[in-house]
Length: 423
Image 1 (cartoon, rainbow, N blue to C red):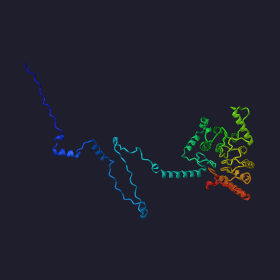
Image 2: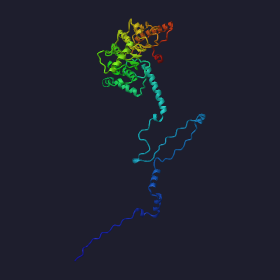
Image 3: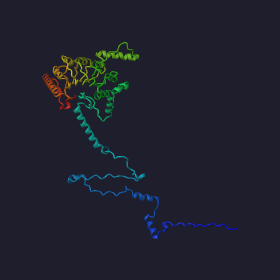
Image 4: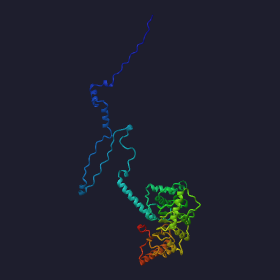
């Protein structure tokens, strides 16, 4: 039986590694180049030594002490360059130890210097705005004639949160009257006063009677200022405003909620009867009726001044086009405690009639009369008004000088200092 033939294939012999093929001299030089240490720590040390952050320190520049610089007149030495601390390379070649994002602004690096510059800029802008608009703290936008301000008004910085909050409320005042009518009455008195001023500045028609009823639903003795500039209109007339400030007494048909309310009502009735009047703002001293939207008759003005509390010391009638013929004496006697009067941008006949006021009688305490002519006024009309104002100034000072009265400042020039206006 024939044997099976098994083919024999030659087995390949593997070649030796290239390392073993080197000569002994080459192998020894390669081992010496690697340092002979292949541990992890040695490898990391070599990587750190070759990192970009491991730079040689810059050569120190010679510096001169500040005292010697002044004596020698040498230039000050430049500040040393900022050191960039790099801990190591992160994933993807990004350096660690540095805050990501753009560099901080200069105001963060030098807060004191930047703060002083900002404060000076703010004060300068406020002074320019006051000289331009004649108003403290509030910028007048969209108004043809600058609104007359009232002395003693709190100033609000245009960078404060209160400024932005009041401005936002004023721009959407009609919506707040509808949707926030149950909560606006709980605002602090000083915020209510500022809010009225912002409404007069940023709304096209000022505050309405509905807005006043939402803000003031009860007697408030802390309200001393009402800025109703640009608010007198067909909706808010002087008779309605007088009825709002001095409401009628409650009828006997109204039933109180409890016997405690009845007792309080009885006490309030006795107090009001003793005083002779009941007003919503018993401490009201500053009132602005400047720039009415419609012409107000002199009879309404006389009736209004007779109904408001006799505590008014500062009154603004700026922008009034009407005058009070044969009613100036009555107007003077209705405002016995007046100390400050603003009649800017009024008809020249009003300045003529003010000469007949009793400046040494009921108005002997008036110390300031403001008669500025701002806005778009024709040169002929402005010169006529200035002529009458100069005559009024001369008459007042002559009467006060002859009878030994107080000095009265009549301010009518834009170049005059504002300190002559406020008391």
